[in-house]
Length: 59
Image (cartoon, rainbow, N blue to C red; front, side, top):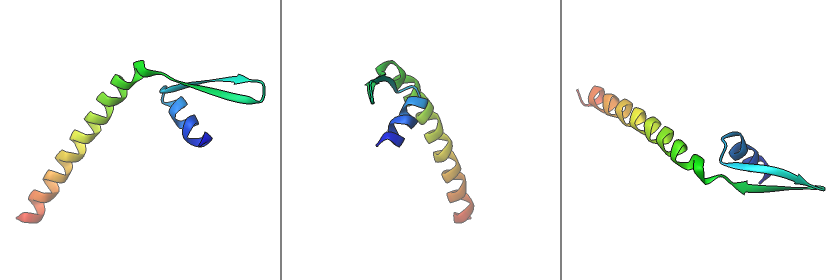
């Protein structure tokens, strides 16, 4: 679980704070829009690549 939280922290979706021996994590909702735009962009690139592959295979 901690590994996943570290990845989310690096992406800016959560922040952490040390409280004694514990780490407390808090969600950063302001970054969701930015991440959504990035994932939509990657999704469009994959859709285009798969469409080109399908066109090639069907010829």
